[in-house]
Image (tube, rainbow, N blue to C red):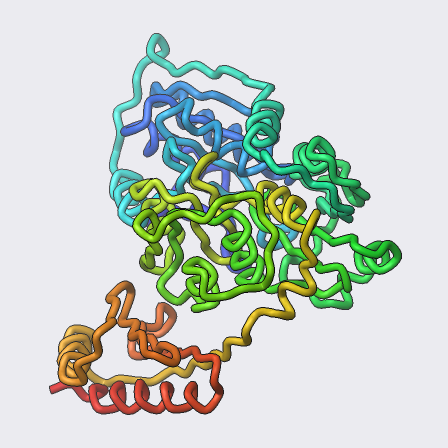
Length: 453
């Protein structure tokens, strides 16, 4: 067997993970983590990939706590019972071989430096213990019930709303219908049984692909629609008129409802969420939660990767985090949790109209454009930093690039992760003309720095 030159944690359309990869990953993890919590999704290959990982862990002397088939939020919450956790899944595209999602003991995703560390020891020859020092496997079959109980205890406000819930025949069906029903919601469940052969709907599906849920929503006034992905991390919300609500608008509504003290978002997050956080938007939200004082509040922007968001939520004891459409609730784990999101939206819709509140939100316009540069990244960074200083902008944030806040909007310049010789300029404003001006200002600055010194 030829060892790969890196850890391929998740499969992709061009390259699959393999059981050999799981065996080697188990050896690498066991170097630093002596008790590992594992769980898997419904995919046919997930059992095979789990057994390979378990073999690698136990043969290297690590103990395993096997949660069985659960949702990702359940695995993240239970990660505290080990030194780290691994969730075996592949929910992005149907038909791929399952891969490995690595989590710290607080449920946060492994950071890039942790992955690099595993890569380093992944290819090194390791001395394995003899049979007397093999690890043990303990099965725990009540993780989902524990998650459901804990989440229900956290949801103080009732949910006297009508909800059409689509669980995509995944493991989220073990929690979402039970929790919403326990909160008092009137739930119509579709695809709420486990079925590994069910071809899941993509989370970016069009309005037409939501036809089945929309028919239920439109037939009963005041009903909202909720679609979960199979592993329970992501959710799509449909308002009372059958319109799909953008994930960032959903986050803004959650912020207006829960009134968090601290939250963490990636650097390119829309100003809509920040304006909602600081109370600059009024959509007439009815909420039982009290407004925190200005001194208690903290809005934190971090680099645009999941590990940085998770780490910042944990380090700052934040109430909410957000990454790529998923909401993190710091009081249960550092994993994005669509089941928790569904419960909060169900609470909210009991006394509020999602359609009316979204209609009352201001419109934020965005644009982005790539620019090529011919110098090195260091040269470009130095020149661009000098230009920003010369412009005397007062509010500049430097995370994964440069974000400049102005009175009427903001612009951001970041290096393109897919092309080493490109930077991406993006801007946002509530005024289209001002947006054009922001793009011109940022574009001119980038062009002037593109050749270096």
